[in-house]
Image 1: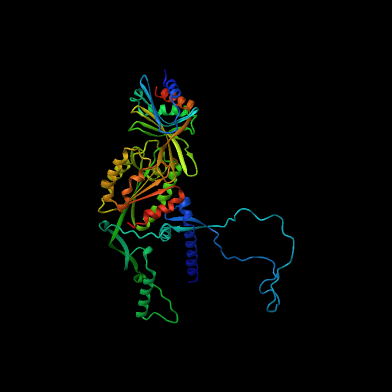
Image 2: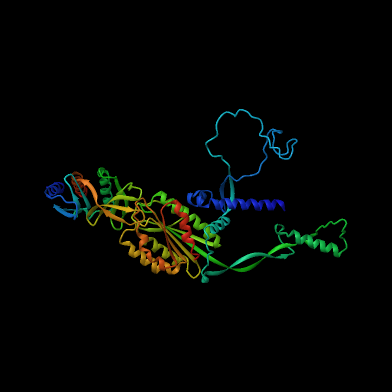
Length: 159
Length: 365
């Protein structure tokens, strides 16, 4: 069963919660998906971190990781903001993708950050920063359907 | 002379206008495009120049016809107003004046209340300079000293009784000619080097680079006014750093990650190789959005503390706010409070350049 289907089943089997947080860890072939949920509702959920680890990423070059990032950029059009590669660290073999442009409010800036790393990880986090403060991880709110689609797209991108 | 007095008054007015609008000039960067070799052309709005007004005579006003003390001055004839309303656009009365960079620096210094820079004691080196301080009997005609030549001619004519006070004609002959001549003098000169470093990684946008360009122009202008021999070097970096020329510095955009330590390493090598700290006053200005890749902070701080700070007069770090506002590097420089040679400033937008200059240059180091 694919990671996407496993996640659908896991969410369906969990009781609803609005505080405390729970983690889901799923495995399929060479991939492992970890989702840190902050809340779960009948229709939607919020997560603080979504990480896909895959051994297939470990031997990729910076150029290959960039191609993966560009493909993801084309696919992930259903989030709050479009995501695109911002920086490529050739030495560390990591591509940093972010919301482009970020969401700007009067006193706050929020954006997704998706790292594609040769260490074998695709990790998606949402950051928010109040004016004059430091950035902090905030929960990203999505419907259950979007979360499962996201898991599927990350899994496909990692190959 | 009257004209000199008027010119001096005019210069005072221009200076006042520039001072009034200095914040605007600093923040909008329009000055940079107007920079010539040593002069900057500045548009001064609404500098009122007195002028004649032409019109019909006999319409009242002062000195028109008979009158008694207390008689009100006439309003003129009533009549229909002309067609059309008042214009909505501002009048175009821009006068362009040329100001030397030195004068501009002086205005900047006065307005920002900047202290004069005190060069490092050991950095004063002797330089041989030519000074026209003596007079000789031969030399090129371009250096002929007319006053001295005529004085010699006058002296000769008086001593030889050929000078007639009623008909005071003084005609110099070849032996009367005097020429300016130079002597070599050793003058102490403080040399200074500015090293600019800019993050050109993918997260630095064109707007941010424009802010850096504006700030660098004013830093340059001020430091040039303080040092005669000013050397400038430019370093750009993303994950790797290199020394580049000025044009490349301002117009390069890379997509690499941010590793500030790479710029510090090139900067430290440059200081070691080219600017021995015992002979040079060294100023470093670094601009970045501060979005350094996590594990690089430690390496960067190590290089900054041990390889750069001990050798420089001043190290200024300007953190230009990125669209993400995610720069954290400035927080790792919190030891700046106890380190007088390290100054940091957050530059949120173009308007903040003015305050940044004050912060950077206000130390007088």
